[in-house]
Image 1: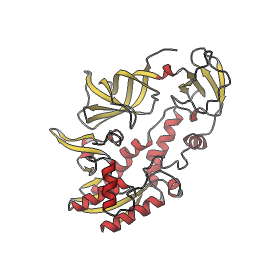
Image 2: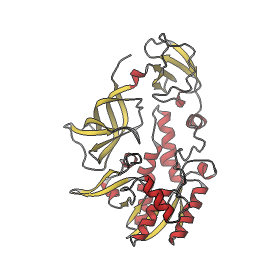
Image 3: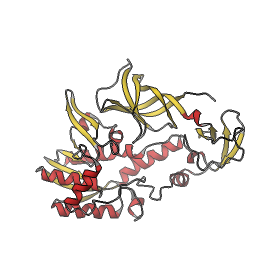
Image 4: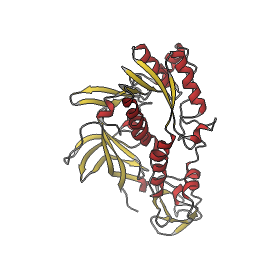
Length: 362
């Protein structure tokens, strides 16, 4: 096949590209220039700095494949950064990496690749695509510590049909060893962690600089008493403890956490950690990797964080919204985050968390 290998400059995408060449495909390496902020920083541990582009080019040269940089920064700003800020503007906590996979890496890139006559786009994600009775299926990667099926849970079957994931059947240690054996200089390169468009890692400062600051009160959720003040509610998210600077301690001396954020009134509500436990999730904007759920609840496993636990649950759809009842509660789940539901190792679909039900009332 003719394949676009998305090359971030890291070890995973480098080995993925090498395996495609070994398999006899006609491979073209492409590095995505997504964020001008990250591109100017040599200290970022994100995924699209100038150093990363140079690393990707060196690997492509070693593999003997053509290499290009695609500047998608304008679309990335519109589809990911602006969406990120809009979510915070409405008191939600988004996952920009999921949005990037949904709208950039496996939408914009795949669309361009197909228009140019390529058969597929390949990436270095730790997940697997398997043939199913109704079409391609997305499954967890073999390495439980690196499984990235969660962040790919927004893909549809039409996208999976033109996607290759060459390393999902291996452990990270095997990929690093293989890279070293191939003589790839990125073999021991650290993994990326930061949000690529926030190279210094200070999300709160980034949001404040774009959305401004509206001072407000920090209120105890149980008593309604004002226990502190803040410079901007946008900087807070459900489950947060750091940065509260509470002036009135809890009666029992226990720590308090953010349990709700009301952007309209610029009020941050805090309470005991038990108030963070939720056992029911409602999600909007559902996407389906497999067949859509119906009105009848079915047994699934639900995951709400990239490397979080998969929790036994029941899930169904009603009026375009996903309803997930958890068999055991999760703590600190904020609106705007993503719930992905699984049937064993197979991804069924995902939704953006819009509402939750507390297990314990204030």
